[in-house]
Length: 232
Image (cartoon, rainbow, N blue to C red; front, side):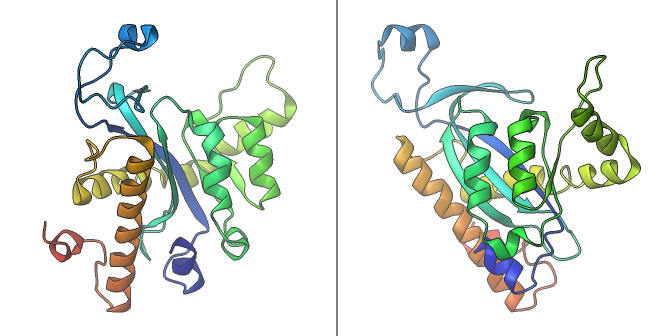
């Protein structure tokens, strides 16, 4: 569906954003001390869920939704690809998978991918360049920063780099909150990684389908009527 939005010109993916959002587990939490000892003290604990840290929500026991989305508000902002992991998985190992979900025709139209500092990795910069676009993350300048990294610092600190990076705040961050609110997936309604992955990705797919329908019906604000359409 993400690739369909691009192929039909419904979104312009010149700049896209990637990030992740923590989702609370269903039921009681499994404290780290008990988890370490392999003891499940209560019934109803989701033993697939793990602990993950967010700077805004601190420690969360549950899962993590990873996503790439469009950022151009003059067209529409929608998920282009997504995946789900347990909350303890960092963004870096999942990034290649969510990128690989994008068709070559879509990748050809992407020039920049904006992401938070958690994606700051030379391996991810190289992977992005091989796919034909530049990964833009906040990068700090240190005394012994390699010359190759300094080029990334210079671009991020430039006027163009700041304009490109600013698109992250108005796109993927509110999109996560909108999807979680519409489909009530935080906390997740099921237990187990496979079931959670299924329900979260189904929610993303349904969100895409509803936005696509509204675009085809030439709704002025294709994202605003979604709660009403599913009876929320």
